[in-house]
Image (cartoon, rainbow, N blue to C red):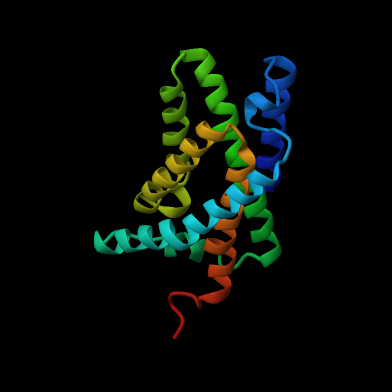
Length: 185
């Protein structure tokens, strides 16, 4: 139900932006798919899975902070199909809501691109605290910062969506299927 609600909220926000606020799909970063977007998305995914993710885990361990294990344990009992749906809906919806829509609206309201980028980035990180905890959510602040800077550069959400979904798929779906529960003997 949570994923259906998130998808419905995202569709409602896009409708609101288009029908009531007069924004275009392009203003939300929803532009026609280009081959470059696929390539950038793949490169971003490799960066997050092979570089940023391992570095974030190492940093959390080095500081003695809680890692993503607690959040993964909360998701462990869910069927794989639901995890895949959650990754698809979550990755695409978060990019539309936190980057595409929020930045467009806040920039028009405040006149400041950097404030428009920073506010949703902070909210994005805070939204990850309940499931993952404070320290892991701090890593999502930095990952979200990369996504935000990339979006500001390209103004195309497709690479972000591709990388976000791929990264979450590896970090959640594949991680849960590869690791036994923490309390297993």
